[in-house]
Image 1 (tube, rainbow, N blue to C red):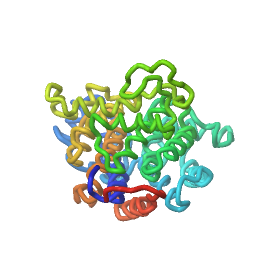
Image 2: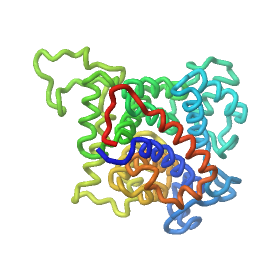
Image 3: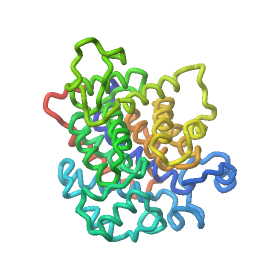
Length: 366
């Protein structure tokens, strides 16, 4: 486990996500890499203005997309309430976000509204359904992009982490596989905030949390994925999510990043290997790979995530949180913090959240 402070890692995760989101604002969703290079050159190295005919037209370099704004809204609720309060979070959505939307993609703060937020708007505003009946079937990382704040807040309490992320995800995304992968990402981020490494052993630690009943995944194998032993009970290790495979992906990606016989060069081409689209099963392997490969180099990690094109905003946001947790806020380059709009306010939110990371009996190496 790393020796930097718990608070530094927690704040690094939050600010890393904000920076990743803002870095991709201009070059967001270019699936034609020749077009991306025409508009932004061969290597994007900082914040850029969106082009007039693109998704975030009218915004400026260093500003947040709607995903970043929703993350900030989530943070404010967590800080104000001292933890996850679903009623307060939903009130914030009702009062601060939904009135600014009209159910179409190219409308609302941040320049673009994602599919699952549009579906939630229709169910909540047009159909007047209660929260809890508002989730749709989008297979994206939309919920991860806000629940990563819950993962940081409950990094020391994996059972509460899983419960809060599950409940919050279901407000906008109800597909069980998407929910399980969202919870798995949160569990990974929680361990990184604690100070564990994103390496070949991380998944073993996650599976131990399953065995201990902290993470609600079903596991049919014994330790280290060995066959179940005769007489092994099933129910004590059965969880809400049918498979633990989402917890195994991070360590496979870490092994690939460390294996000298496996090279993805340049690293941004990980987006071509695992896929440029929005779906969660494209995004997570690429984010885990970049976060493991550049575990001590925040700038390289997020810039390779951005330069991969496609849904690079989610890729950079998720990668930024994972690497930010590993390097800590203190090792995020100052130029990336200085170029982020409202950085001082966001850093204060991150610091306030980080100071709440205390549970009885927890002992760290800090």
